[in-house]
Image (tube, rainbow, N blue to C red; front, top):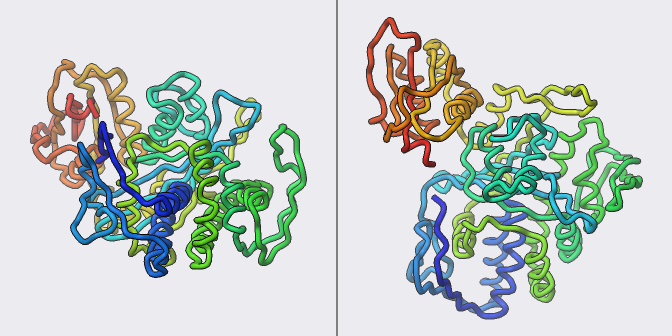
Length: 456
């Protein structure tokens, strides 16, 4: 679904409008699906107030296949029907560090352009996962390893691959920001209103110089500026630990949404725009596949999203994990895969009916995965992907040869529900199914991975 960047892309925008696009782009990036709605609601307010003129976008060369420019429409229109999913990462980037960073925050934001339903899923940083091509580690380490070992695409790319691998979802784009950007931006919108559900007293809140300070806030309504908002979103010292922290971050997202969409914010945002655009340039890294016209089209698409009714907020929390201490005294969270899938499916609208679940369970299909390509380890990683999505794999190995052009799903015994689920997960066409009808075969289903799968 991702578009190729054009060689030349010319935008003819009035200065004030460019400013507002820059401001709102920040919030699109920081708040994911909620941000898309922020952009549209604010721009609608601008249009009604007649603060800014109309604008046009002209492209001299290749146009995004996901976007069209409809006559009479001010904003570009998102035309692709596939689900859009963005990985939002916050890094604890400090002045004295110039190399590699772990992710302090990981949030998946998703929107289905057909149903207009969205979701936000917070991932705890201590989740113990397999990092493809590297090791078993906390999920927040993926970004560090990607940069440190010059992984193709760097830290953001490896973080995306790790989340895709362990949660079984496709991620289209990523956005990475640091916390100084968050502080300055919250200050510039005049702070946010938060109703704190319980008193917090954290004597070990980390400072930029690797020391500690005390962060205290009483239960009840508060108006937080940047520093306080960041501390509220990052502190871990409550009964729920990281899980409470993730819920507070989602609470902050909603508060930013509410604040930015207030009509009286528009003149203030416009006046501060030049500085905010500088913050964007210094502090936020955007997936190079994501173009400005696509961001605007996504915002236009989300004009019908209702934050309270159409967006599902969930956390991979204590219901999905087990606490564990490693031999070197590292605190980690072991994922409970079935429960984690349940929460993921709620966010992504992938709930299977009870009848489907029962049918899959009754089939109890045994599965073998064979690598028919030159890609080393493809059978292993695919097997782990299938198991992460609830399909146990009995065995994996290399195929009889490594030059299969197309993948095959060989049914030695009739397991139709499992076969359909495999095609869906692996994104293989119906033509991949071959009926072997071999009742003496060791496995009910044999998957041979070909070049059409290995080249993705």
